[in-house]
Amino acid sequence: MRMVAQDEESDEALGLRLVRAFLLLPPEKRAEVIAFVEELVRARGRPEEGKEVSPT
Image (cartoon, rainbow, N blue to C red; front, side):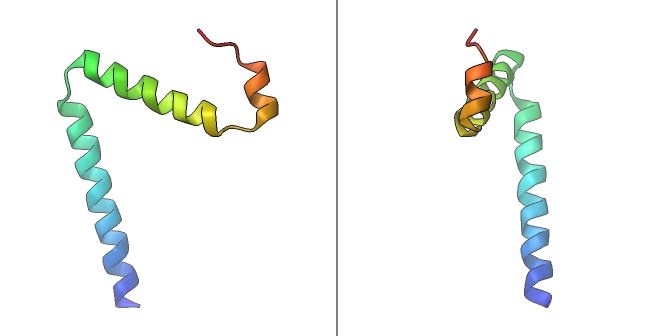
């Protein structure tokens, strides 16, 4: 049971480090990260959803 708590704390710490690193990026780099993540989400979406979204 204790190991699960340690894993959760590690995941939480990693998440906080990622958020901090993201916030330290200059605005143009943040925009690139957001665009990259949005593209990943679209690529992993269901096929019927992908057909409804037109690329910009």
